[in-house]
Amino acid sequence: MSEEQKKIISSSKILVTGGAGFIGSNLCETLLELGSEVRCLDNFATGHRKNIEALTGNSSFELMEGDIRDLETCKKACGGVDFVLHEAALGSVPRSLKDPITSNEVNVTGFLNMLVASRDAGVKRFVYAASSSTYGDSENLPKVEDIIGKPLSPYAITKYVNELYADIFSSTYGLDSIGLRYFNVFGRKQDPNGAYAAVIPKFVMQFMKHESPVINGDGTYSRDFTYIDNVIQMNLLALTTKNEEAVNEVYNTAVGDRTNLKELTQLLKKYLSEYDAEIKNVEVKHGPNRPGDIPHSLASVEKAKKLLGYDPQYNIEAGLKEAVKWYWENL
Image (tube, rainbow, N blue to C red; front, side):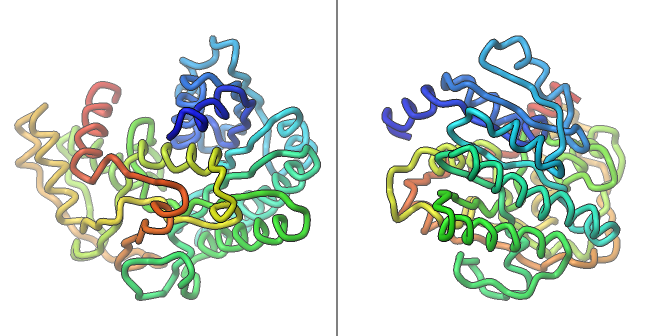
């Protein structure tokens, strides 16, 4: 990120929706470190107060408790802000299969509310969390932004609808937006608890308790696991780019490498064993494949490199070492 881009951030007021969540809270923290004023909107459905506890004493940080499903709340949250980082959503494919209505209300109605509120408030740019689930049943590897398949879950449908709405708002109302298709993000502050916990924090916690994690399937399913600091870099670049070609586009937010679940558990055992030697003896079990899961996910990040200047700093090994250290010290 250039000095000019840092200056844009330090002189701006930025709204982060879902700012108490895993990705949102990390973004809030970084934005404050870079000197911006930050407003965090969260209803704490999946976010945690502990994630932003250290920020609440900062005079440049404002916490607004509210729900994006309420348009008036969204309008209030967008008042006086320069940029929006929209992270608020109900994640998880299994959650959406169990309760598609709530996923749609939050991810589609809530998203549309935020677009309307951003448009009406004259927000300069709306950067939002899209998803790799949008690729659906497309078997192309690596995934490139303009080739997608048929969605395989209600969650995937909601995230694709987000992209369609953002495109309409840019062409019809002139609201600049950039969508970031996140690929299996992991790192500090990611919640290991709950029915819909992501695989890395869940497995870390189980290994630390000497419990056997269960891999869905035979372990050959692979993902482009992406460390949080790469995602922060992408958000900052999307927020501040002056390249007109780069705006009103969607980008893969990933590393451009894939790791299967067998390899992932081996790496976790290796790094966790440095803190507790017994962990290397914990057995890994296997269960059935999850419905709605795609077998393989690998992103091309060439578009982001070319148009945004993206340069991911953490591969899976470097990211896991950082994440494991954080969990060991904080769980």
